Image (cartoon, rainbow over all chains, first blue to last red; front, side, top):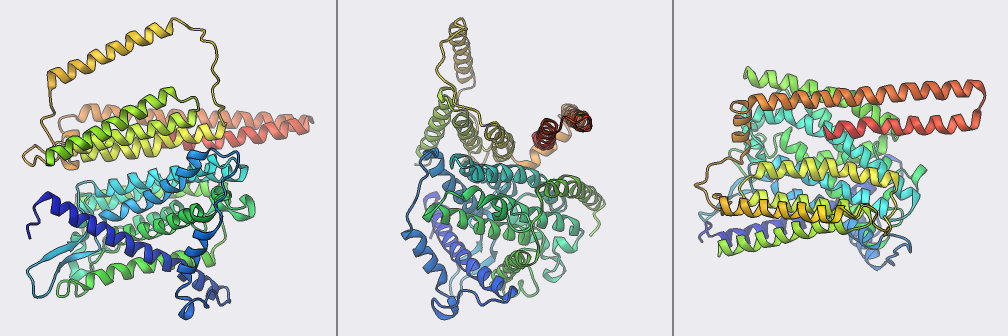
Length: 345
Length: 212
């Protein structure tokens, strides 16, 4: 088959996107279940264990419930924006999946077909991720505004302020990796971490501060505990999605978990070597499992933090972001620039 | 086939850009105008990609759609700006002025189209020089255009310092005044005003910082 034909190429990319979206959405559905079970374990409860074997069909039961619920639209809401906000949130969350490299070049046995496990590669992949993520803010902010509810509005405003503040630290924490790798293409960033028998990860090569700053800002970017002020239920009922019900609420829910998944993938790709690990050079398919294993570690970390930490106060959140995290990210840039300039590590 | 697809995409995004641009002006609700402006920026980013300048496209999305417009939307939501009513036009001379300026703009665009013609680059043309790629932009910024680049940096630094100075002075003096009023005994009013001013000033560094 001629892969250079643009139409076949586009068709294959659509196929790749279809598979990746479905796989990611399935993983996300089971992340929700895992969160409920792990949280229950941390809090000494049992959690959902009735639907299917040990609760394994619970995500589908939840989905059916969301579909069959009544979809309530508040009377004085701004209808069009109210309708479009969850779509913006989910679309922005899903759109970043296409640039992540899931694995190295895979060779299908008994044929001469081999292809890398990545949907598309381009020059500015990392900037694309940042751009699409920053557009996702509108989903939350507009949802809060259009609901015509003071709690929703407060939630939307808080989330806009929080996301703007932590986006800076997030973007700056990536500069260190970009300086060391010398490229914005995620696939070649991962390839450069293949040194030291698959352990030349950037976190082990001088990017530890960058990793910490990224991890904290990523948690804030995804509105998770301890940074979940936009939906602080003790103060704001449910924050920006107070008025949302049925499938529109499910879309916000999904967007949050897809965002968790994508920031975990970005952390894995940039700091933990992506699909690199011992033995990948001999058995390339191992790379996919390394990649997913690292991503699942981050997802577990998210749930663990939720079961452990209390929520920030809003002024603490702002002070922490602007007066601690941002200077730390700038310090990391200076250190990484020195490392890159003198070619240390 | 490929050129046809390219033309179709160009038509789609051009129509989106122009439609959103008209909506920015026509909409009476400021939030709708802001959302339409985001649409314009996204359509422009798509045009940059088709002109083989992915870096500019990504920066367009990050800076304009992702940072500046978020702040605009934030301010509109915070102030809860009401929908502007249809008032009788007072400044009538603005209408012919606007028509004149629009005519000048159209003439300018027509001149550019006439003199430049089609863009020499297209995304499918691999022989085109990689002017839009990140590394080439970085190299030319730090060699050929170093002086403008450094001047811009200093300008932005001045803007940051100025913004911080303004925000700090305002918050310190207002807090002092609020404290003084509280001591003299005008209790209820001082508390509310002091609380509000402190709150509004907390937002100021966020706003200015992200623009820069």
